[in-house]
Image (cartoon, rainbow, N blue to C red; front, side):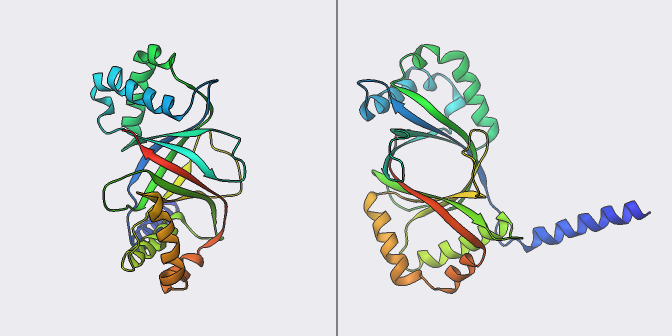
Amino acid sequence: MIKILLTLSLLLSGLVAAQENKYEPVANKAEYYALNYLPGKNYSDLKNWVLDNQKKVLSKTDAFDNFEVVLFTPQFGSDLTSHDAVFLGLWPSATEMYKGMGYWIKNGGSQAAKIPVATVQAVDTWQWAISAPEGERDIGAVRFADCKMKEGVSSNQVFDAYKDFAIAAKKTGDNLGRKMIFPGPGATEGDYDYVYSLYARTVEELGLGADNYWQNINGSKEDQALNNLIESCSNYRIYITEQIL
């Protein structure tokens, strides 16, 4: 009887906790590859390889129907020598991601031999989308930061606060995308709970968003509520981005 009561208590407490979440995160998978160019190769070679790979391998199956590719080049950071570019592959789910990986492993050998880069780090992640920019994408920009939550704070609480912040920010003219990223296998170890991604559909809009924050959002109740949950964010870095597929 005691075990039954304890089980019911845990179930009820879980339901209460679930009801306290204001928003329900929708998770997607993402794979990040930090790359160095092979001798004599550059960004154009990498971009052309991705497009050629789409034509010769990825288009031959439905496994990549929901696959997106974004390429990053470092712009600001504490160590710009660690890698030359980043390949980001976006998937709706782990099922689709590993289905695509399986097809590539079996059928991408000839294309893999032509790749103009060497991989220096590969990270498997889950991502929670908070907001997305509106309008057609161009050459964009993204800022990452490693963030740590305060003691006793859950990722769902932080997500709720980010959503409220993003909704309030949009009313002031903000058009930035935001994600909470949870790195898995391959991630760099450190004292952080998640990586915060702040991205813009154009380079210019990342600057507009920064000015808009300081002029219209800083110190707002949504800003304060978010800051009350976060202990620190560090290791800020910015990349220039281009969606290829």
